[in-house]
Length: 415
Ligand SMILES: [Mg+2]
Image 1 (cartoon, protein in one colour):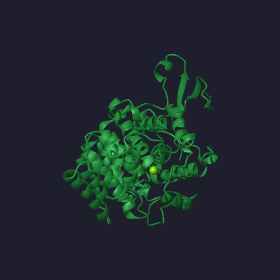
Image 2 (cartoon, helix red, strand yellow):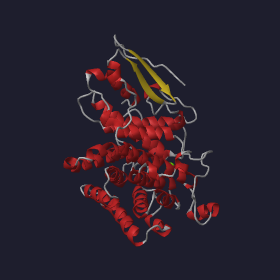
Image 3 (cartoon, protein in one colour):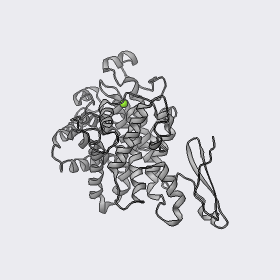
């Protein structure tokens, strides 16, 4: 499909926008020699292939884990074993009428990514700086609209964004009731949840916060400040839907761990960095206790379903965090960890998704079996968002000559 979009007027340039298979590109037809140096394709692809590989691994790994967990999300382990045998579920099985279906975990993760990038674009146009909270409030309202208009893609025009235009996101995949009710209560205004929930609905969507800040975590001299910023941003975005401290502190921990993995820190050290930040907050004990149990069990009882049982069912945030850390800590590769993460009696899509984020950030895209990537629902969109999170420092948004690129990203990630 090709469509021509409206364009800015520059007297000496003829420009043509086109969209193909929802990957939007820009072709410039410029007078030579300008055409030689200014031709570009938008969205920009990350110039660093290793970075691109890890970012894609992180986000697609989460999608794969979510899709593997989807068919067994509401089954007890005994029921999983009855249906799939003693080994448990080992491959995609039908869920929501298809193979490779993602659930609310991946949907909301994508809208978290949208919020981070919308705040980035907005910060280049206003003087007030990065407003992740406002962007998060907007993006999560868009996700709410996809749930309210499920099966009827479109939604309110004022909510338009590139992600919101993806028709396949207008599907209800067992959305968390806390997320739905808190966003309904906040409709039309920006604020924090007034509930006392520590459900896993906030921590499971927080990987993109770590991905966004990974670029700053790379710099050793400012790493400590970047860790603090990562933690606080994830905690703030979590507080839009979850009012209990553990519901949002776990999100801070998870985002820091993801970010540190993306800059090649070993998982044990990434967890230590997150614990150091966690200690600064009151009400940290519940989250810290869960992390430490996961670390101990990964050493004393690795790769065991009994250990998962001890860690809980993952319906609450600290249990989801503990199970995903445990699975990532004691697994030798992506497939082993992800299959461990989905075979238990609790929220298999949350633990599959979070473990997939962690293992995918570690092993990169190449570590994820192609047989799971190929049928993954929304693979193209997840990959495009991962590329945007990897490439945004290369976006040119501020110069007088950057008007076309600025307009492109402003429409793609509006605030
Ligand atoms: Mg789910």
